[in-house]
Figure 1 (cartoon, helix red, strand yellow):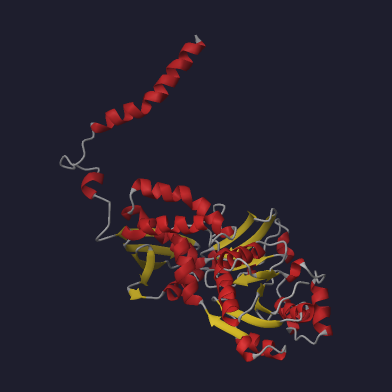
Figure 2 (tube, rainbow, N blue to C red; figure 1 turned 90 degrees about the horizontal axis):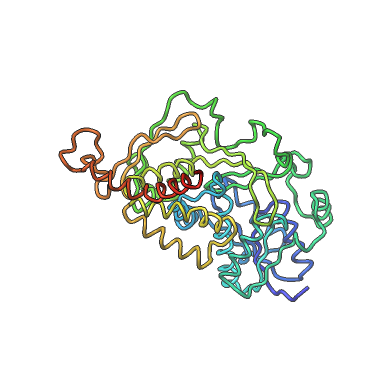
Length: 411
């Protein structure tokens, strides 16, 4: 093992990271700093501090931080300005949280004088790539310790045995196998479910799996109307009430959840080369995506919007594959953010049994919708319909030439 003096561990206090903490102390004989991030996972974080103290971590080496506002403001909102969707469906709820955690790991490493960071991502998943690409982009010479790529504790039973041997406290449900029969990851944008019984893509998950959405069948029979106010592509108010970024997402999660909005069952292509089945709940994000597209529809130039749509899959893959801090993502973000200067106004939506329906959109300052030109009634000469003939003939010219050539060949 190479010499490591101090390491910052992304620490949740669960079975895996508790074992990792002790393993780092024993294997590398180094000082450990724990970092626990609150990005809206909905769990009490104080137990993580208590467990870290029991494992001999100095109070000055325990970092527990509320990053919910930064997460939505600096990561989720910029991503939604691009209307990001991976492989046509996935709203990147796990992917977008990893660069923030990597950023804080590096910042804490610098603050505490640590020369290494560590994480609990497995060697099969995407998160190892996201954590480490982010860390190397921000701290090129940092050492990354990924225990799942080094140790032989590759099963739950081995982890429990290690915990018993070293006196590591383990949640009773984990010990008795009473936990969820799959792996869950939660933050303010979504909850994901994967592994365990979900590894069979033919298996339909039970209704009790879903945590933040009711089934569309059991959702209210009464539709709920919501008004979103946009400024430069970001939601700044809901139903007339000004809100911070985290408040916006929290509010929309509750609204969407009670109407069965945002469920997804997906087989996706992981960056590391395999296919993986995951189930997701992203109620607030689903509403945000629908509303943003509606706002852009009347405030953005046709070709600018088309260019954004062309770039969106590339931008989304960059996030999914861990390139948030790459020069190409940063360059694309500048272009996307510049396009949002005119995305100002109000969108009204109807939420009903799993569906998000746009009912109206308006902008007092930036609307490109001109009813005088768009009307099917008499426009008073605002649009000369005869102009379309020349436009059509010019665009049909290549088609007519090709058709005439085919006609000659058949003779």
